[in-house]
Amino acid sequence: MTDDVARPVVEFLERFSSALGISATVIAEQTADGPRLNMDGAEVELLVRHRGEPLKALQHVVDVAFGRKLPENQRLFVDALGYRKGKDTELRQMAKFLAEKVKQSGLSQQVGPLNPYERRLVHLAVAEVPGVTTESVGDAFSKTVLISLRK
Image (cartoon, rainbow, N blue to C red; front, side, top):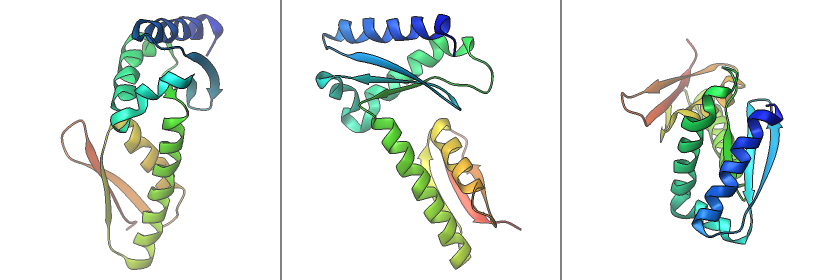
């Protein structure tokens, strides 16, 4: 992400935290999937309360406001105190663990309900395990991912 696109997002997050009355610094990092903007500061913990729901809401606002300025295969990631980064790692590890369990037992496993971002992480993690496949199941925003043996 070029600085001319990153700068407005960083400024928005700084204004957002100021409006909440909390002191925060925003650090932008480029990843293969897109820019990761991590908010840091003692009071930023407010965003990770209630299983990160405030952070998810902020992510949605940033996606709507700034997501269209990115290339199609890129996405903005808003994080607070590395919360999402840790959760993403846990989700990938769980998906791989369940994929291995499917290979050993032959029984399908289900993960979810998950939002589209979380489902993508599961699909990508399971794709690294040979012999298994994934499928999103459901018709709502939050679907489950079915991990089963490849036929």
